[in-house]
Length: 321
Image 1: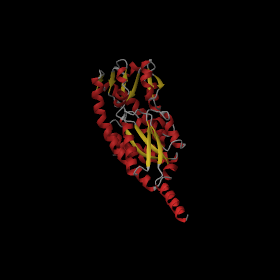
Image 2 (image 1 turned 60 degrees about the vertical axis):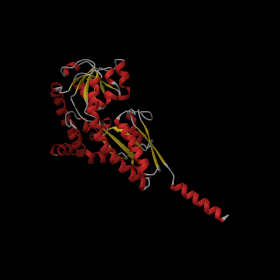
Image 3 (image 1 turned 45 degrees about the horizontal axis):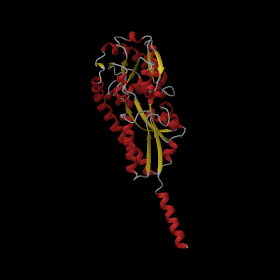
Image 4 (image 1 turned 30 degrees about the horizontal axis):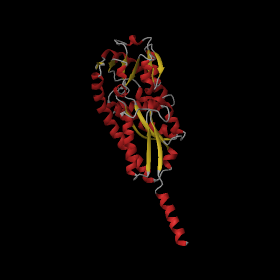
């Protein structure tokens, strides 16, 4: 009997040692997007690094939570971790919208500098909301898609312009268009029913969501490079064992490096594909850039006023690099 009890105790200990942690990770983007594919690699990396002890199940295409609900779901521990576009939360704190100020950072090199300049404030802000930042990855530059040709911003007046964050709503209003809030997953349907006429989004979204089927004009204004962030609930992360914590952080660092390279590589590929699908590509869009830069300067000044000294320090640091 004593030997039996010892054996049972050993089995119980073994069961505890090999207890598997299973986490859900929702994303608002399709499984075919490079952002979600990078998430999948991150999850696989954690699985391998922990010897199968920690499993992360990625839920793409807003299948678990709508895109604009994911951040709140992580904050409230409805899910341990999630991916969301930072600018979608800019009404909560200015730092979430710094990467969506038009014509502040318009290239991958600029975006990296802005990411570095704003990282400490972003980490601090997320921590204050009970979350830990794991990594960020930018989408390709945001450019203008339109059902009808656009020679200048006045051609957008009276149209329905898709908005997905406060910055895009501001731009729509500034050019005299009607902002229509539509998440990316819903955009193809909105285009098919005439619910939207034009929008700012990346080359990646144009290909992944087959937006070229509904709009034929593309203007490479490269307004900004919005970043997605992958975050984890602080309390749930701290409850993990050391091995799992280390694995998550190491794989997050790898995902960030991989994701930035992938984004830039994919942008070039997507641009070629959009042209191949029959879109009329204006690669310079010089006139539109000039007009939009005026709006950008105004939005930068407004953002600094809103963000105060911390925001001013971010912009100064970015411009000094």
